[in-house]
Image (cartoon, rainbow, N blue to C red; front, side, top):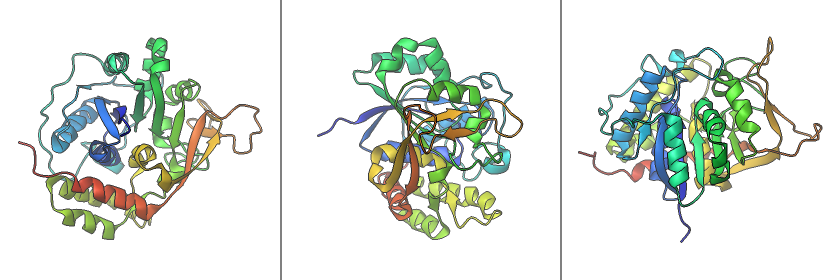
Length: 314
């Protein structure tokens, strides 16, 4: 039997981060070693609290650490219009059961990677601040990072500006450092995640599973969909879960090797992920860019994930 992939979950939860973590915890292909928070969808205090509450909901007992309150250079940007004032509005959640590590997010990452017998895969689903700081502070650990499977960017579109996706825009300097690191990258950008739609009929299927996690996920989907419904989406795009699906069910995805860099300044294109679609730059590909997804198989993956949760942990 293949050994599970050791992973660190790094995010700014966020409804789609939360659902991504539900999927990760349910996947036998993954072994979650640690959780770290980053500022993005909401302030670092709120995303950290949300991370701890999600862990309590899904019974995830691993070290968790708080990231810095701001990006490397840019001013913070938050997204209450999408995720609410708490960053995870909607259903009530249990209070945290796992205390914060005394280590910073970066130092917990470093310790976890250094102590792991196997190379670790990072799954960042928020701005790339923690990952960039890890690479700056501990360049010796790069060889022990197997892959970075991230949600961020978009080769053909943005969502927070015409050119930039939110996670990359929040900390473009961090994103550039990560893409230029030489570590294998899987990029789940808007090109694919906008197709990872979970629709109202799917909400009902998930709710009907009936356990506490399934009902909460259905409630999260209902809340998350309200914002997207105003823009005529037929469902809620669960962006961050695609970064997990790429590791546990890659056969449902279409991908292309490509060189990707990040624009860090400009009047219109700050935070843009520039993909060398035709290889005109002369650079070798540095990312596996996800481009399409079997939507029905993705929904089935989420449905099977929530079925693995039984009674609510005491």
